[in-house]
Length: 82
Image (cartoon, rainbow, N blue to C red):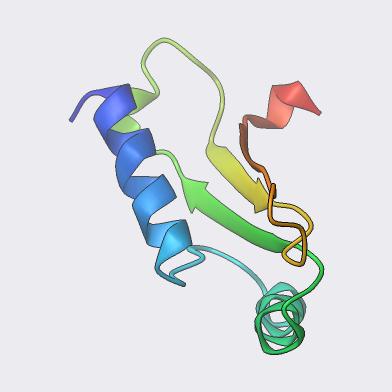
């Protein structure tokens, strides 16, 4: 699987409520944000070994900010981006 296809799959999973590899507290925060329709959603997906040959990045984070804003933004971040 190429990196772009994998990232698109991760984004679709995030959009459908599959937040990947999160701890209990982050999952609870996501659920609360959805119930209140405010705050942010966070997902973390582990990069498959087949895509790590040219990078040392082991995961990607996807964050949707300001659920109550009609112009909300979703950002994909590698650990080195923050």
